[in-house]
Image 1 (spheres, rainbow, N blue to C red):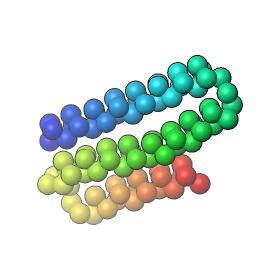
Image 2: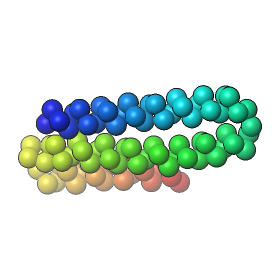
Image 3: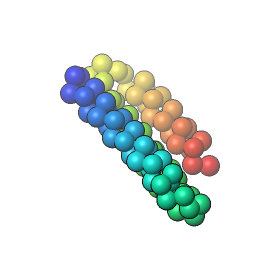
Image 4: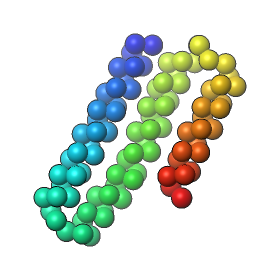
Length: 86
């Protein structure tokens, strides 16, 4: 379980570094088209990090949670993704 928490933390740090790097690039380049492209890439990276982080957490909790609870969590993640992509 501690391994899963470490991996989840590192993934979130990686996500933050990617976000900060994108923000600095947008401010440095100062071009609207390029800023939109960078923002579009972030819209792809964010859900991927979310899915991987949730997967690591679910794998770590698999022995502690019932199948029904895991299904409910997966449905919740799917709703989050559908809401952000629509």
